[in-house]
Image (cartoon, rainbow, N blue to C red; front, side, top):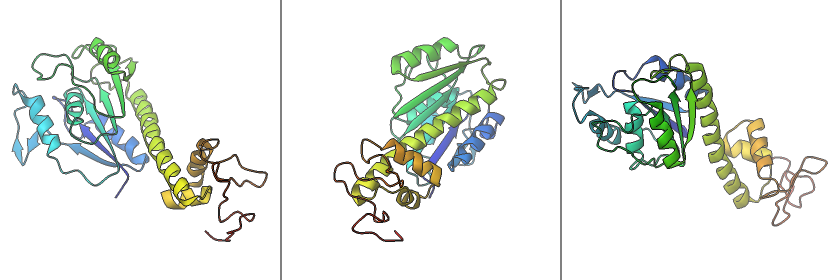
Length: 254
């Protein structure tokens, strides 16, 4: 099981393997995420009427009944109508983050005009030259729900701004995964009383540089700064890592 699952919801006129989704899937995979792109053009092998009046909310129901792989963190990514679908679904799915591209808010024909995002973090990307969903809609949504908003030089499809979208998405996922790992690192260190970078590296199954950054983030809060030999102590108890030669419980191999 991979820790991070990223689920993509395409727009009304596009599909699950469009160039934008494919590009962002590659970004997610670089973060060791499992990716899933839902095909809303078909459901249980049956083609769907994309122009049906209730299509947006039918897609919400389809996403909610989609079998998701096991995961620890869930990020929903939606474009246009898919942004509406992802936001609505976040009410019932345990969603850690929403990444919305030109989301279809405040438009006629949608049951909810101003759906509330239910996620720890929500980021909106919108093209300034969008003539399908006015960028002012995302400005209003972001103000009302205190979301981060990136207005880019692009149209509704954002193809011209795709490199910028990829960079924003990359930083967004980095923030999400780092926040999660920092919480796990704090929990592990407090439970084991072991302020060791190698301990974090092994138990979180991450590289040394990331484990070191997490440990440095906990300095002054959970652990002390390293001494001249690079070893830290627990801030509240003064305990050392069993790998620290100065520890009374010293072991050469944790």
